[in-house]
Image (cartoon, helix red, strand yellow):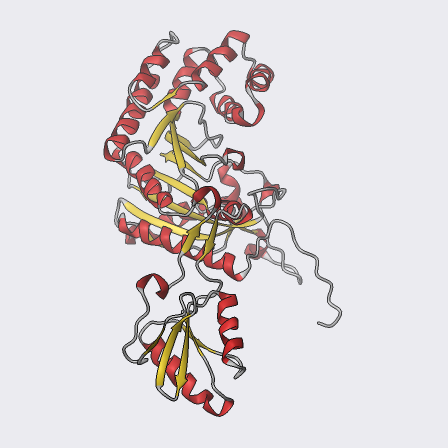
Length: 445
């Protein structure tokens, strides 16, 4: 390991300890919130058969293919790292259908890998947090209202800018496109999905080139994408464009039911936005995207939708609806912009000072007693003067230093300077100091 040259790998984030504390607190908050809503946690293997990974329509260049140094044979030669948690969920449901209770409500917080070009908020290795409800043969519409509310609840508890959940419905888009004569619905959706990135002029040009759209058809497609709102007026504005179909009416009914149902339970939680297309072709109903206010340049931090045919074994179909949070994307922004910081740089609540090395065993017993009662404690690495040991604690943000003095055991709050007698078998710090908490700064403060 001598003379080792370090070359950072782009796209593989590694946080400093205080950044990891932020990440861990966010993950714990997501987990606890998902469980509050009745979701069970699972974890799936990191690899899937390559043919299964490519079923979703992703290009092979985005998949990390496993290659053993000494050569893989047979099944080992056809494995890739999963690039999301939806394809593994489909396989998991099929393998375990006989043991699962439907509707199956699962959450999954795990790393995924994509071989794409790293940029702001986009990584090759990153954490996603998914929630899905999967049914057997059918799945009630009310789950399409439930899922965005779960995410709104989870995201509102995080130390991030407010997240706006925007919703549309694939039936609206498909019904409208077919009504105006655009038959390649999948390609049209993929093009309209780029609207925020490239603008209306480029989208109109792409529609003309890719799906042979006339100027009037492109105008109507863009007019549909401009419609947004939080009540039934959204449907009225779509109908005012002058086109109708059974599928379009079904989609409008679902979209209005979603927006009004969600906002009745949690006002201001969901807004209809018909430029949300979600380019992947397996979505069949509600689709969602979410951005952080003031940080729209980061792109969507939470997205997903309803799918009716992604999970099937040929005999039985398992429809579902799910949403996925790009955890690493959010964390990279809040850390990179200094929007949040942990209350201290280490988990330690109490540093037990050491008078001299001959008394280290006593300090270790004190720390042990504190830990038995759930108080994170560490022992000073040296028996330097108390002033230096206090500086050691202060640098790390440790709020309390414990001393063994001639007058007995004492603990000092080094922030206020207050020092009181204490017994390691009974003393407790304030609740807010027991664990690390996240402090908003800057625009969040």
